[in-house]
Amino acid sequence: MQKKADISVMGCGWLGLPLAEGLARSGRRVNGSTTSEQKLDMLAQAGIRPFLINLSDPELNEQTLVEFLQTDVLVLNIPPKLRADGGESYLQQMALLHRALLASPVSRVLFVSSTSVYPELNRIVTEEDTSFTDDLDPDNVLLKAERLFQNSDSWVCSVVRFGGLVGGNRQPGRFLAGKRDLPNGDAPVNMIHLEDCLNILERIISQEKWGQIYNACADEHPTRREFYEAAATALDLEVPNFKDMEETHFKLISSQKLKDDLAYVFTHPNPMAFF
Image (tube, rainbow, N blue to C red; front, side, top):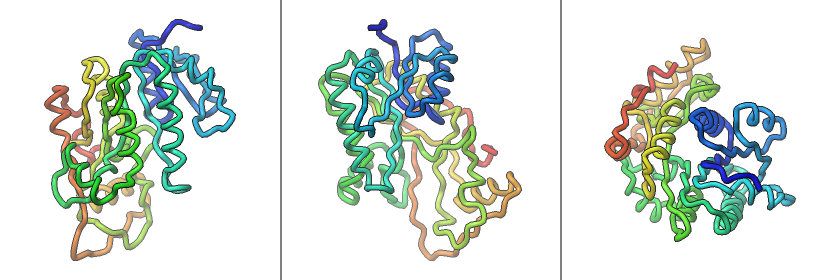
């Protein structure tokens, strides 16, 4: 078996690939997983040891997963696909991975999550506000997955809950362009740029900030109307139309804990400057 890696990045997509590339450039031994056979050469050329792993594949090669998990740190970056079955298959995949981790040398897990774990409380929201999720959305799939990896005596887990992901090939002007009668135009957006995502993950790893939960969103929170109209205009697309509403439902995510603990200053603090 090949020498143990320093870090394994599960899910080398929009976020995981540039993260793994940056970690490899810094001199770390990095394993990277993908569900696409076409990506294997690209990972190898970037100095990443490539693994073809699809946790939903009933013919998954368990030995491949064992070798991928020969590492000190696992970055778990697999966003759930909730539309098909409400997230049931995702939780099954996470349970499979959890069982494999128990037999691995992994001692630290960095779980990439989302601010979708929070309900709309119409106020500033902090990391402790998942207590309301337990009451209002007890079947929240992401929160169940987070806790699966947090509640372990075999490793220590940190969770990063990112806001809306923007940057690279994710152009927000395309998200709502031309749509009509959209709700909550006056609600604040909670966005984060790819560059800040990468900086934050790398800083958690380098500063050994384990056993923590962090929200991660840009400092500024323009309204949905302001943000998506400007984003569409920047791409010369039809601006979306928001209907007038007597009541706005929202959550305004605070990243203060992250900024304090990591001494972090956002590179892209204002989403209106993302495009």
